[in-house]
Image 1: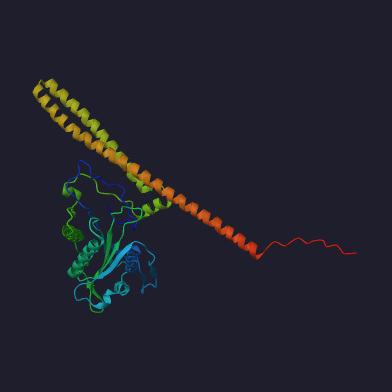
Image 2: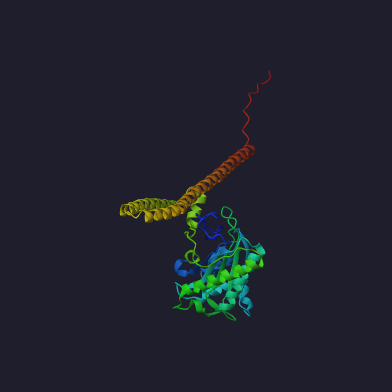
Length: 378
């Protein structure tokens, strides 16, 4: 599950806890993704830092003003530096402007972001300590500056979706500037190996925090296949599709595509089951014709023992799919009600404004009284 509810990522499918094919031990949610802040994609570290911290930063290189002081949902924003780092690097605007000015290439990677899901089982103070401890380890390990912003769950998303945006420099912090590129930013690095190491460290820090808090749940950075879990990874709509659904109350093309894919997989599973049933019938016929009645009975019993598990798996998937459609329909209906309420409020406000304006005009320019015909006295 991508954990960024307030940043536009909404999970559209999640295996329920009573799924018979899922592991039974307690498991908190693991998420860590890495994104480069690159000029080739039209991005800047000043804009990224301002948005994530909910602050205003002026980009000295371009003159752009990035003002996100009205952004909601930022629970905390901290600068984390390696031991013995200079004081100037604690200033968020100065640090990221220095990072921008240190790069000359038009396709330079000026920063790298690590987005992590914070365990909902921890308190707000424990989640913040976990993020800062992880950032401090990163800063000391690589010699970089790290900007940590913790965001609250989105109002319309999963209320367990606490997450942190960890933005680090790509260069080492020196006395008066940013110096050489980090070892992990050098050309020729096997970034897949670096990512696996970071994922493992985050899992280790998270599990230590869960243990300190007396929580039984643990996270696992390994793939579902490596964990022996037979299900597909959680899928996400992404910010564009999520924004479209919030604005219109209608399912996005991405949701339609996912549901079509799920229906096709269900149909293929049904077809495969039918083919398997026909194959079983043919096998039994061959065994019966061979005269090996004992072997035929043993084979029949074995298949009969397996059949309930296969049927339960197909039924479980179908139930999950139907429940997912029902949940999404309910969510869309709620969004439509909210949208209609908002439109009604805007209409009433417009009518009230027009009435006030009409009354004000009437007071300023009252209608002229008709002239009276006054007769002359004789």
